[in-house]
Image 1: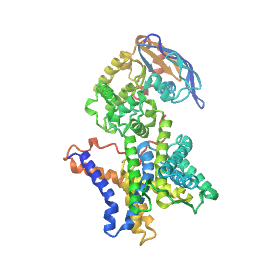
Image 2 (image 1 turned 90 degrees about the horizontal axis):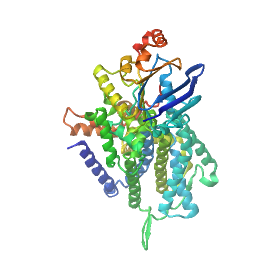
Image 3 (image 1 turned 180 degrees about the vertical axis):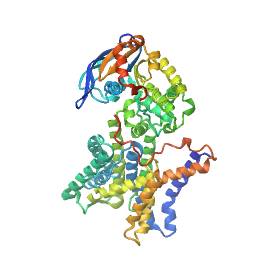
Image 4 (image 1 turned 30 degrees about the vertical axis):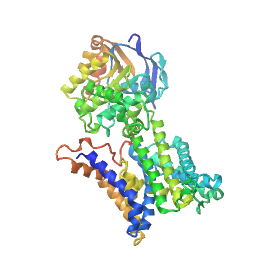
Length: 253
Length: 346
């Protein structure tokens, strides 16, 4: 996992008069757990949306594995190996847990086969079961996703993101809304995943971020305010000011 | 007994009943009803085309009559102009409908929900008026008749549609094959991608599904189903008419699909069946029976949103499950009306 996991140069996005992401240039190193923090409205999620192609960048390059992906469609970017979770957890609510993941595994393997039953693809089901086990949803294999608890939905979404066999995983506030026990479990899982997949994490919980991130980028008003290790960021005056300026941030997510 | 086994037994009984129709109904002096059942089978395929889009892909089309009409004219024109046999004419009808679905779908599936519904209506109206005004080709409102070729001819032996019983079995066979193919598709990897798009198109794209292409494939398959229905109806009536391309026909298919249960495989058959039987009985003594159809539809949408088939499945489930651990594994039948077309959050 040597070299950059993701290289952004001059990435800009405007919504009308508002510059949501303002010329962001940064290299996220491979083999590390990277985090993005910053006050609400700093442009963190918009940056993720630009990386995954859900909204087009106005200008700039987004380089993944040495190629510019800035003009690709979301489904093409996933196939290149960039997968993500969303701030508002997003799964296939009407399908069972196993079918949620089967859909993702089948898509990843490019299987369409209109005249074969899904259940006849044994290795797909086996991989799906592996993923269910990895995120700890084994007891819920046949549960309809919309009947899962919030924390379990987040885990299912994680499994969906992993089913795409990504090289880079973008997590948008993965532990937001979780209870203390769920948080502990999720953080342990993120740590485990980060050992084999490059991770970029958006998170509001400073304690968690300072605990697990190898590298932190602080965003404010669409731009980069600071970068560095947890120790660098904690002692950075500009960062303290940005956060003191908006105390409600610790509550929101 | 499990719910799955109960369903299988019901299916076998139902199939046996359909097979027995041409022998049993005339014995009760109801020969006329053999053709009614045949008509129900044909129309259920048009409802099935709506069902595939609405129930499995999350797209509400009010324009399926267009592909029904192309199926009809594919049969009538190919027999009149090229003198082709039964099977080629049937296949040409289905191919014409599928090609039209591909041509219009490329534009339509870029939109969703009400925008999609509107563009499908617009396409069907454009071609309705085009067919009405090209009388030299289509016969317009009067339609064009043809004499159907024999279904099968080996030496002296021949099967023709002139015989009501033969005609019934030919229709039943084609409809059964169409439903079986549809059942296979919705339970295949392709079908699972339809459901993924129905459930959450943003997440579908984020696991790597090409949402546009998936919707287009579903739209073309739905067009083929509607085309099969139209082709059979042409053989059944021995003619094709532009009047069947009107949006009234599309709307009726939506009502059948919703009342029957839009996420269930046999829902279209139940919906078309119950409402056509209702029409045949009620229209004899009440010309405004459509008011009652409207009321039934509203009641179903409000109180049994998964339609007749959904209510039936729930009943089987309740009867076969001991109280306590019931509803966890109900098949993934979709509610008729979903909210996934609401403007999404950024």
